[in-house]
Image (tube, rainbow, N blue to C red; front, side, top):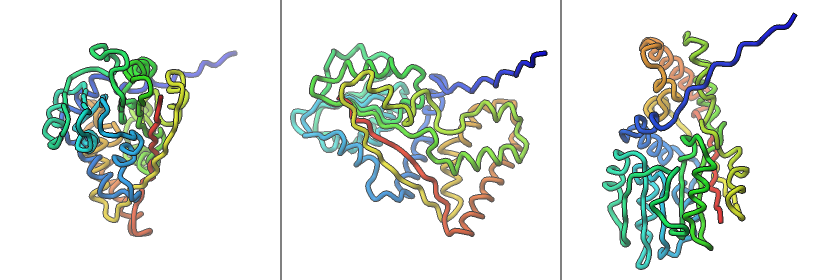
Length: 294
């Protein structure tokens, strides 16, 4: 007698439609950025780590793939000088509008263009001395296709940067979140369909395998950090507005009543408050790396 095991439920998809909806406003992205800057324990901002990895003279041609609201781009462009030029590309018109408003100092030609990382055909082979793609691969279903395009538009002797987070970064938040979801009564099948960490086919954990198929030289430059909170509110803003309950809110639809999210909110907030009372702070450990590829 044979016993067949039930197939695991299909994981929720966080693809193009999600990107356009999630980044249709600045709330989630800006909340994450603000929290990282205010509560980081690493003295060096991640933007400075990225800038150092670019190794710019300021006169390069640079492409920012997935520029978002211009948070990183703003610092990079302000340090460019005569002879340089910058192109910023994003799939979200709302993000491009924000980037235009955020990048207030540019000493070199700066172009904003709407486009998809899968298709950079508007740019010639080797068009850019520097290409950077910061945190876009968590939303990319076909990493090899995007990496091939990044390689194609990178000039001989140039470099492409891929900044990415580990799948199990911030385990304290995800562990607390899923324990609370089960405790307050979210449907088991719904819970099983949610990502248990940073989503994406390619994360920091397997990036080296992917990028070495496209680039001859790959140098990983880790950036380790922790976010330390001494009161629950800033963490709850990060968890709710920044991460939308670790993606659960984005996929709830009409299936999950608001009361369950209210209970989840109260449970997680109570856990954070208890940890702060015991230890004086609540800390999220983060693992990011910049892969410098040439």
